[in-house]
Image (tube, rainbow, N blue to C red; front, side):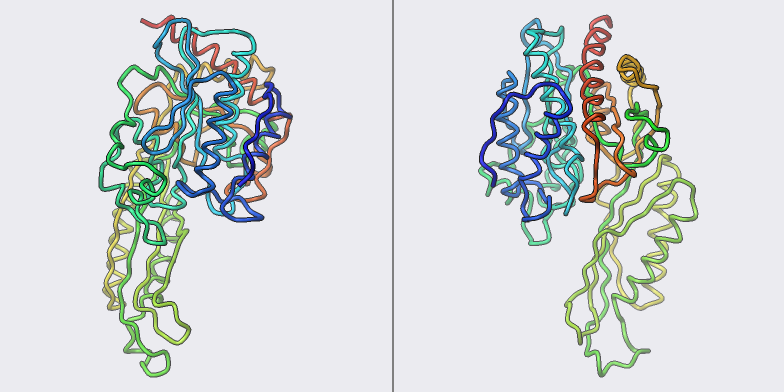
Length: 421
């Protein structure tokens, strides 16, 4: 792992880009960025972010699920907080800006407030959430869900590809999964949540705009599917007598694609698939795959989900195999708070930028936090809209605009919330 880094962090784009590069060095895999929840790379990156928070003038603590929080007090002790932040985990072979941008920009905002000697009516709290991507465990957006008290104990028994449960990984990291309820915050403790994030899409670039105000976050369903056939010798079982789990799964994958294409705005992705026993000369007896289904309309997504389950069972019957589909997560489409959206728009305009309002097709911690408090997001343009990919790219100039907009939105939100009864 990289050595701990310590340096002044002025609020400008070039410094932010250097800090993003430094954080990207914390990876499980040499030559690429892979930082899964509770891996040694994730824990080391979290420790480094905690040091940066401390240097910026914050009081730092790590919760029971290894999210890191830094608090910069307001004018009055124990004031409700405006929370800024994002997540530190990544997908496999990731880009360096997804999640990390929001965390490090939030630290830079607090560092700038501290440099000015400025205290707001609210505290400012920076959140570096531990798990958002679901890249290790099937527990997408686990840690922000824990903050709002929306995690059930059975979720901690979910296992990664190596058979390690969240509970076991927490124990190996020195934590105790039974303390997860302590992550939940009391109502009113967080006055608002604001997240700076790369767009992960092409809309801002097409409009030649650096920044956008997010209006809503698409809903999603995530499924784990197991297809059970009969393994057999590749050279002796006649084709008509086979119960090939992989061939059945292939039919299912094509049906998923057809279903997604039948509804405007509906998206479905099979991102993981495993065929067992995985030998060249053995008919696959079992196949596991995942489904990620999204739509801005809950009604469309729910209708498609029901049709999907029916289609999977029909294919299984036709193919003579078993099929179990576990819908382990369902997130409704989430509108963000109008007053926060308006504040973000005003902040973008104050930075000399034209204002565009747009929804997010990707899920974010902001969508979870919106259930607890008024929440908003600032999108930052990324090159060609590419994300979840090493080619993910932003410019230093845009990074500085994003940082300025986040600071301006925080100041305006502080004043706006203080005026409310």
